[in-house]
Image (tube, rainbow, N blue to C red; front, side, top):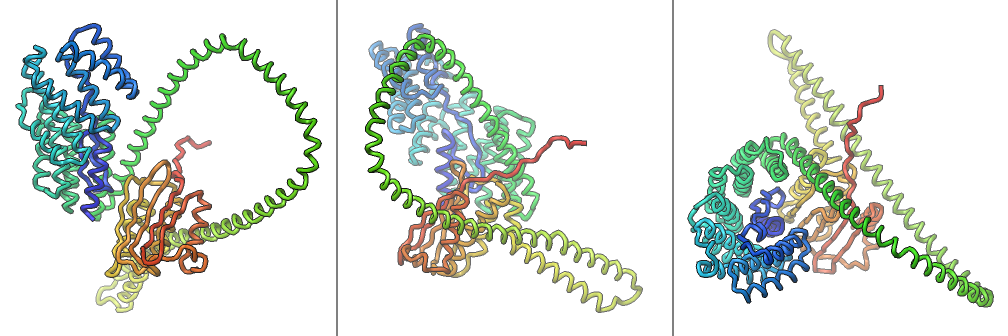
Length: 604
């Protein structure tokens, strides 16, 4: 299972970051590195006014993510500079073309132009004099090697990625920029070696990245590298050391409120919560909530930025449309009159023939109406049955929750109070305490334990405290036994409306009950994630499966009841099963967000 988790981390890390592999379990937040592959504007552009103007025009299209237009103009510019044999300009355009291909995930062509850029740079002493400067050459060489390694890493070609990362490591650390690139490749190598289970080597490179970031006073980079180091210890089940690293990372950036620092703090708090939960320190819940609050704030900020950008674009387009509308107003009015006149003529012709066809179509419409009514009646019956079933299940869930809360908050409190009174009574005896008091205390303790267990059986306490992420994993662990192994792979979940979480949890629990009762499976897997504002999960097993055409006759499966509940929640249920081929179930449910707290002042 650890190998599967690490593979998933490797994929997520490459997709979410330009170069940094996120060495963390899939249920954690890995260090999210900002893009270190700057655009080609960082390279020296010769002071050729014509070339500079064309180059900057392409660069602006690239920065606005208009990649197709940027690529077309860049290729034309590249061909023009090849004829002039200006190595400096040719180098700059080549890197920009490679960056465009990299941004559009065309890694094969990106590699082609990065390698071409490397060739131009290595011949730089003959093409442009600026490269004679050792700092310029070292920085440019480190950047190209870093780009090549990153691109190979995205293609899952780890050996090639390591080859170019090692070349960056061999470049002399002439200045701060070269050191910064080395810190980044050390973080990337940390992830690769962790993926290969070479944990000692991964730890070594993580520490190298930490030391370089410390040397150049890059506290955000140091915090991210420290986060990665903590994640390696977490994979090794060394939760105390992992916790220590997460706390160190938080301390480094606790007073930094930049967007990158805030995002990194959210990751560190989330990972810290997981480490502390494994240490049975339930203050973990507080840190998890801090992580959710930070992430919600970042999400709101990004949305506001997008709205402002769209509003500005809309204002510009609105002015243009207003100018164009003045010129087109007369034409629109003319054609509107023509269209109305034409419509009147067509209407007259239509009504002449309408009466003749009316009688013929009347009987057909009556038949169709009767058929539609019958279909609507059947639909209403089906929906009514589903609503009745859903209301029954909702009532049961509400009742179970209320009973659990009463047992936990009231009855348990009363028993604890009674136990305290007995302890006070025992202290009043000068000599031997009567055996009846001791037995009474034992009975109260046993009753408290049973009430707590009963309340947890009615409603999962892990679900209420920590949410679906932990509750489903806890459910998989509880249901696993010597005959059946259940694994849970959960990513990207947060807290939602409590009633919604309970419904999702109960649906998953019912599917697992079916696997236990009917599947005869040896292995089962739960994959769960959030996508497009929906909770998505897949539950598969390697059991005997069943004939899907006979679901209605298998009352014990409970699939019809689950399907009715999912329909009421406006969700999707897909089942793929056949005899002796196992079962795979897919469910998608629209998310109901958790209620926000109203901070308005009360009316006095």
